[in-house]
Length: 111
Image (tube, rainbow, N blue to C red):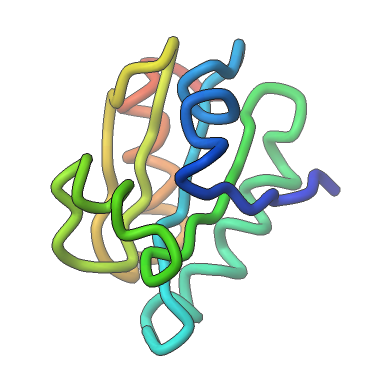
């Protein structure tokens, strides 16, 4: 199973924007109950798509600069990047099938 890595403001550009593969980032906070619902789903997606997708988690309380930079006003928010550009976002605690459908739509194909 692929490891979901933590990312922060200091390594955001190198890890997320500089990745040679599509990237999914889960923006969350410890106090957020819906984030605790989405977290295990993100872990599953990371494992299932480990060959083609990098997956990160970013704590918005510890890294508010990133949330502000991307205009994230509610969590959980999943940001999808390709070639350093945001290509999609999923907001809220949605079922896995809906998250995957939006991920696939953002990437134009199964990642």
